[in-house]
Every structure is written in structure tokens, then in C-alpha cells.
Image (cartoon, rainbow, N blue to C red; front, side):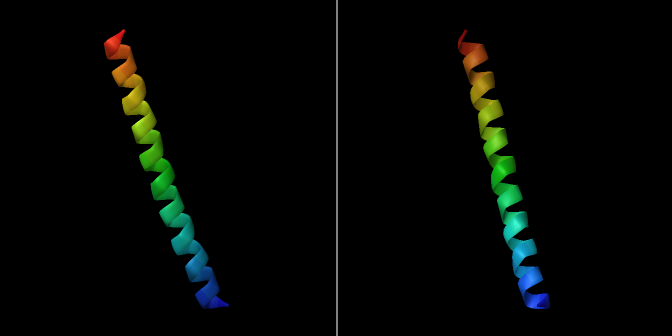
Length: 37
């Protein structure tokens, strides 16, 4: 049971990292669009 919890926590933290990097990409893209306009 403990192992499973650890797996879920690791999975969640990697998902969080992915989401944060996606957000950063989107923000940079939006900034790029604004500078084009």
C-alpha cells in the first residue's frame, strides 16, 4: 500500500511539472504574439 501511494505521488509531481511547463510555454507564446502585434 505504501509503495502504491509513493508511485501516485511521483506520478502527480511529474504531471504537475508538465502542467507548469505547458503554462510557461503558453505564456511565452502569448507574449510573442503581443510583441508581433
